[in-house]
Length: 181
Image (tube, one colour):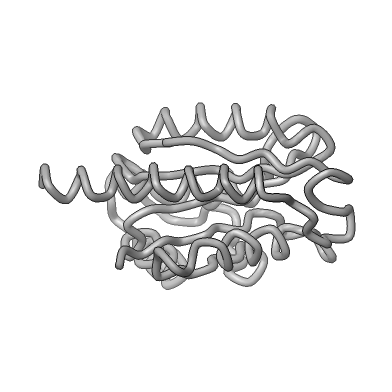
């Protein structure tokens, strides 16, 4: 079984990101070894390494732990809300800590918000593409249709099926990469 990291990117108190991350993890744990990486718990400071991430030289314990968590994942799903038309600042910071670790990493995005976080998903897809990550797809969850603003999940069979398709695409990409390597 492959390792899947689910990054919960919102660090706001009482945010629903943890509920969305748990929903995704529950649906995916039969096919993956799932680890939830909650940025609120990881609590990375603003990028504070002396060397550029592109050098691959990481010295701070929090950076080394973050790098190890990303390296351990065969694939990643990022759970992100849309704040002011964008993904979260803590997520941008977490991505910026690393460089080569994102390259060719199979990734998916689960966005949530009043309009399904479509702008945040598009912006995050562009950022990850700039880092040469392999974003294979996304699932958009909308408040009042798929979840309540207090985090109660009401996503139906269609969204569960979309998540299943995303999981299959990630697994297929991981398998293909392991055959090529």
